[in-house]
Image 1 (cartoon, rainbow, N blue to C red):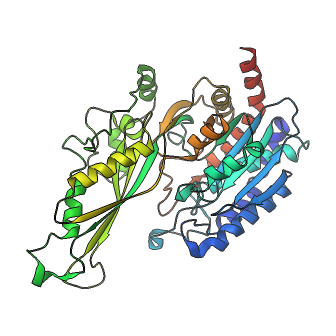
Image 2 (cartoon, rainbow, N blue to C red):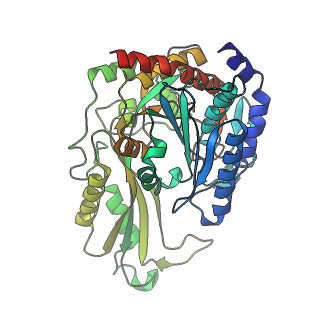
Image 3 (cartoon, rainbow, N blue to C red):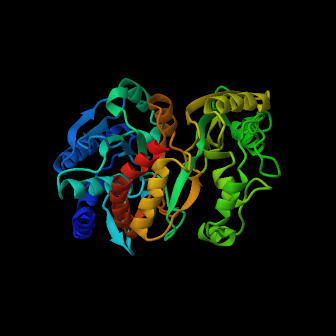
Length: 462
């Protein structure tokens, strides 16, 4: 491994230059006008993976944005790792809050700032550079590798499940490695063993059959904006609990061991609140902040609109109002079940003065990976070698819905080996990747490929 690590250390500037090229492409999957940029990103990845020595590199079309695939299968008798990531990014809005242009990657204070730097282009690039180090220093890899980079993660991976089902033989592997999660904190490497699921809904309420003059009709008509906000306000009680009937009936409680593991993490509520510019935190009573973040379901209004919001005044009583609402789910909740419960609840609390429509936009179930699995234990060993510290265990409050489909369709577990940080502004202005984590991540990924075969061999002996 010494020559591999030396190669990585000697190519830092080259890695940054290449990553900046990738980050410069505005691969925003949710915006149809940027579809050409999605294809340009896929072509960039195809060319790059070919150049570093990967094989069978191809762009595979879906009904949405394309999937980029590559492999190297020359390690006879060794396990096969399927590396998953996504090359699409969130919109850059609001642009005026960025200190530097969102698609011109800028180094500042030990960070690299750009949309996609951490979520997820920077993290998939970590794996490509680790693989390159092996392939350019001996021409072989210590394990078999397959790679699948999709372009729809930020919009719910709508077409990836069908893609996996249609390409089971191509994607057959022993485990999946995903780098789309965070360390617990800077200098605190950690292995993520659980993700929350998600159910994402849209609510539309309609009052009168057209917008009305608020002077002529105000006082006789229930304003749809008022009605919708009243409904949303009722979705939590005074203790922060979600009022949707049935929300908590399938929730798996934390074990004593998990609570003990959470307590080992260096957490401080006061510092967390201060970092967010808050005087006080909020959440379901009876649980710690980490428990609420990782192991309890949530319901959040992500957006609300209706009526007139332009410059100046317009005395309008709107015909419609809308809201987008997401619910984060925990083991053993079902996204499909929660979506139905939510729709039923919304219709039950809708006043007779308005009509309502509820749309299920997308969803995904939560997931837990066994901590004692060889994939996770190899990650622990690799992180310790890559960062010089024994990692801790954590869950993540976010969602990667496709992880459940990998398990259901391919029958294999996922290892969440992420290198981001909680404050990296993913989905927000001034997103960044910490450069210590980036370069440390490349070393860790190299160690992981090297360590896994032995852990896998030990598993077979048991």
